[in-house]
Image 1 (cartoon, helix red, strand yellow):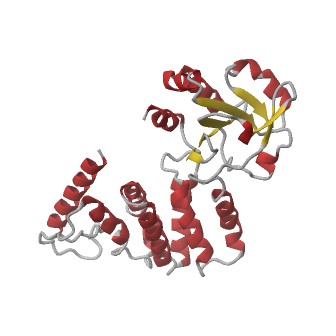
Image 2: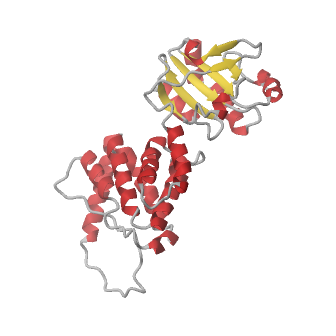
Image 3: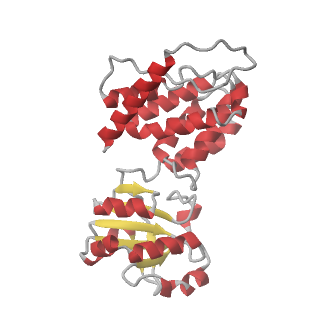
Amino acid sequence: MRIKVLHLLSFMLIFSACNGQQPKKVETENTKERTFEMVSVPSVITEPEKRAAYLVTHYWDKFDFTDTTLIHLPEITEQAASNYIDMMKYVSPATAASSIKDMMNKAAVDSTMFAYFAGLYEKYLYDPNSPMRDESLYIPVLEAVLEAPVFDEVHKVRPAHLLEVALKNRIGEPATDFTYTLADGKKGTLYHVKADYLLLFFYNPDCHACKEITDQLTASPIVNGWIKNNKLKILAVYPDEDLDAWRNHISYMPASWINSYDSTVSLKNDEIYDLKAIPTLYLLDKDKKVILKDVTFNQIENYLQQ
């Protein structure tokens, strides 16, 4: 499927390149329609992966980062940024990170433009409500912000904090251990939960989205099949202080889950995990390495199904 999509992308690029060679009407500066000018991929590059990498690397070559009027044209600039982010799924993580940092370095020619793009990336890559959120892409943005000379140290305090949190519990790395407490007062630790896969579910009893996730997990034949085969355990953790609300909610949680709370509230206060939004789901392997981080129910189910 990936190759088919890339071939389609290649065809679109060739088509747009051909269109770009057609004679243009002579227009005055006042009547000329402003658009984002896409680069053309050289015809000698034929492999879909390499064409995608070239496009991502040179995507902003024809964009004028000194023209701050473009900030007020979201149909051009914001749409171009959104399309750019979407293309990242066709290239390697290293290519994506390098391209983003190079683009931010170009934007640093003007502090207003730089701040605008930093805000756009936060909106699309960090906001928990964004369907395009992607921590792995937001990290190079934060690194570029911290390296940029156009921001003073005061404006770098928040990005530095966001980067510190983002670098915790990354995919492929061991998850941070913590102690949880059960309804009967007994305590346990993350690393003492033995399972081929462990689903961490940080939730709040008064959260509507958390109820939806609970219902989806409970109704999923795939998830329940893994639980019944002793391949998957679910550790539900309430990270806040209102224990009365948590206890009143116990009967709603499936008996097969480990339903717990953080008696020290350190998960939230010390930001051991990035809980910028509740609910938050992590999938860990038997060694407690992070497989999926801050994902949706559908992403969890798709992974288990595959």
